[in-house]
Length: 236
Image (cartoon, rainbow, N blue to C red; front, side, top):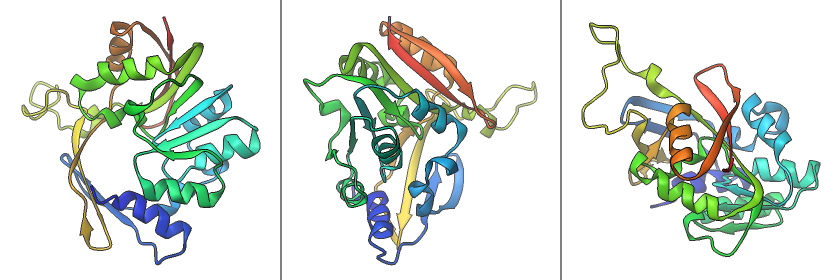
């Protein structure tokens, strides 16, 4: 990976001629994404993210922290002990420059011997496992990082609305998808193309079933305006 997403974040933070990211998926056409959005303050965040930040407590892990906006809010406004992790070295450098005290380049799947009261998986964080057949391993890892009365707060979307209806009123979903929420993402930045990567949007019922299958409870906290939702996962 060229870490173009992180490069865009660091360029924005250091005012190094930042440009829009171009994102394209296996089911959607190319679209421009303003990097400035990743630097939004609390008041500019969607209600789902605001609710998650209100619910965050104790020792917190921000997984896939990106530019660190959620971590900064919790650290500075709520005086919370927060650790921000991301696989992007550029993003973590930007987080550090912004003032996040504990920001580390780390894949959550490699995190060991730590426990947290709250784990944040925001901006569709559960999608980082890429494919539905990997969700059990992902949830088991997250489960191992939770304190006994801990919570996971994650948001995602049910993207069934993006598929066309067939003659019977059902949805026409390409047969090469094992699960309709599985996508391939392409990112371009400053005329460079990132290596395509797998991503997943998981609908609430599928998430709930996966949680239960892995000895976890799953609760719907809030629904957004566009097929999105915030869920809380706890130990069963």
